Image 1 (cartoon, helix red, strand yellow):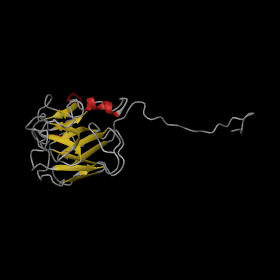
Image 2: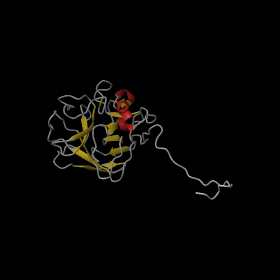
Image 3: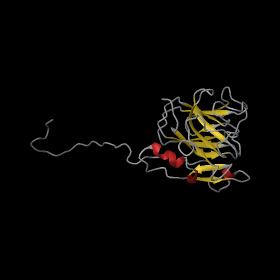
Image 4: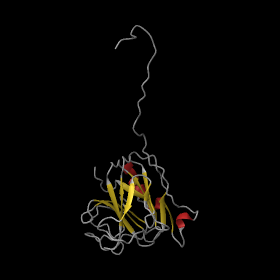
Amino acid sequence: MALSAGNIAFVGFNADGNDNIAFVALVDINPNEVIIFEDNEWNGTAWVDTNESAFSWTATSLVTAGTIVRIDNIGSGTITASTGTATTGVTGRGTNRGIAGGDETIYAYQGNATSPTFITAIASGGFSTANGVLTNTGLTAGTNAIDFLTVDDDVDIAAYNGSRSGQADFASYLPLINNPANWQTQDGTGDQGIDGTAPDVPFSSTAFAIANGNPTVNLSVNTNSGTEAGTT
C-alpha cells in the first residue's frame, strides 16, 4: 500500500559527522515500499537545484507501526539502515551528497521526482523560498512536517525526546513529534553528534506504542468434572 502524508515522521536529524536521520513508521509499511529523501529546494511546483542528491530507503520486510528506522552515513562512507536497506545515488538526482549544516530541508516522498507524493519534511532553518517551501506538498508544519526555525535556527543535531507511549493511535503522535518544543537540539562548532552532550547519535531505537493495544487471547483446558463433563 502506498504511503501518504503523515505516515512517517522524523524523530532524528544530524548534519554533523557523517550525517544521520531517524524516522518512525506510524502505519505498517509493507515490503518493497520505497521512500526517497531529498534535500533539494521545492518551490511549490518543482525542484530548484539539479545538483542536489537524494537517497532512498526500501522496506525489505514488514515494518510495523511504531518502529524506528535509523539511516546513517548519509554524507560519506557506506550508507546503512537499521531495518530495510538504504541507497545513495538515486537515478536522475544530483551528486551533492550529505546534509548541510544550515538552512537545510529534507523532504520524504514516494513516486517520481516530477510528481512526488510527499509524506513528511524537516527544515533546520525554516521553510522558505531559499530553503524550500511546503506549497503543494500537502504538508503543514506542526502537523505532518517540522520546522526548527523558532527554537534553534540552523540546528545541527536534533532528536525527539517526547512521549512514545500512551496515545490512542499512532496518528495521535503527529502533533507531538512535529512540535519542536518536544525535541533536544544542539547548534555550534565541532561534531556535536558525538560530543557526549544530548542529543548524540545513534538516535534512540525505542519504538512508539499505543495505549490498550490489540488484546491477546489465552486458551486453557478446564479439568472440572460433573454431569455436563464431556458434552459439546
